[in-house]
Image 1 (cartoon, rainbow, N blue to C red):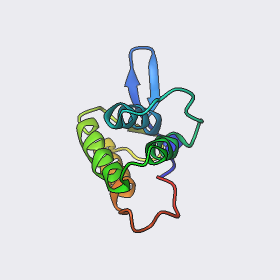
Image 2 (image 1 turned 30 degrees about the vertical axis):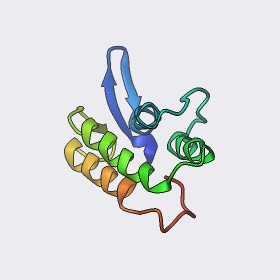
Image 3 (image 1 turned 90 degrees about the vertical axis):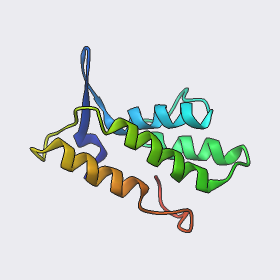
Length: 106
């Protein structure tokens, strides 16, 4: 599932799910969300957190918590008609890998 296909409604339109999760994750992990690069927001939050010398495992725990909280948001996808199924798949992909595999981007 491409990250550019998952959106959630806002008061003035739609926002992409991954940047929304990245901002919430940054808040949860207490790292700056300023200047996150488009398309790599989650990875940048993780890098900023790790650069502070903090444990990698906490990133996965925090992302799972933030994503679970976001499950209540209405989710839209241009490629699937059932938003909940899409969200569940995205959540599974985002949180399935543990810290043993550091070679991939979040």
